[in-house]
Length: 197
Ligand code: S3P
Image 1 (tube, rainbow, N blue to C red):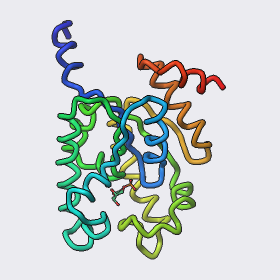
Image 2 (image 1 turned 45 degrees about the vertical axis):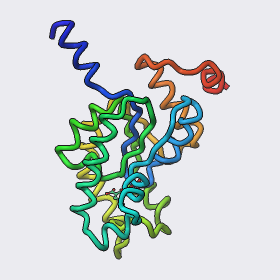
Image 3 (image 1 turned 180 degrees about the vertical axis):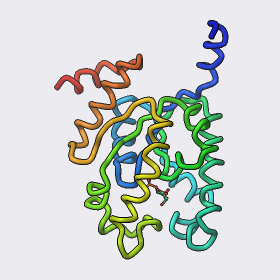
Image 4 (image 1 turned 135 degrees about the vertical axis):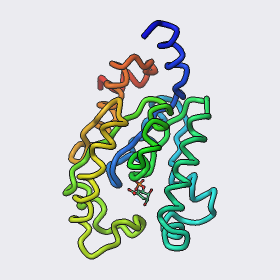
């Protein structure tokens, strides 16, 4: 690949930090925490969809169906792709699974996959009522089944993989920041101090 082609490809990427991973992996909590550390606005795509539709995700699934929701996810990704002001976005756990979304996600910026085991997801979400896909008689089997299919999709989209689950929130944030720094990101001086504390 010659230099100008390389440059164009870089220019082709939006400047965001994108979190992907299964439900309960901590995308929103880590993304929101890092918005202070990196001094960037944070947005959650489920919230963006709820605001667009004036309905909760559960209501959209119940009244309009999962296929309709998946269409909205792709629409939101296109908006993120064309937003040139650097932000942190957390994507819904199913967004990377649709094949057509994968190249789009990669073009949105640096993609961090928060990896978690099915058992840890179950522990975190066993009382949850807001995830329509997990409102079933055997949520642990469902989680295992979905992670088996989704794991490779998450890995295909990821620039950085961080294991989460039994790690403290601050330590997960520090792990993400160290990997971003290694990838050439400029980390604010006060955040660097915090990383070393
Ligand atoms: C979904 C994950 C949810 C939400 C919807 C579907 C999925 O988002 O988009 O319930 O298919 O994994 P979170 O990953 O933020 O929980």
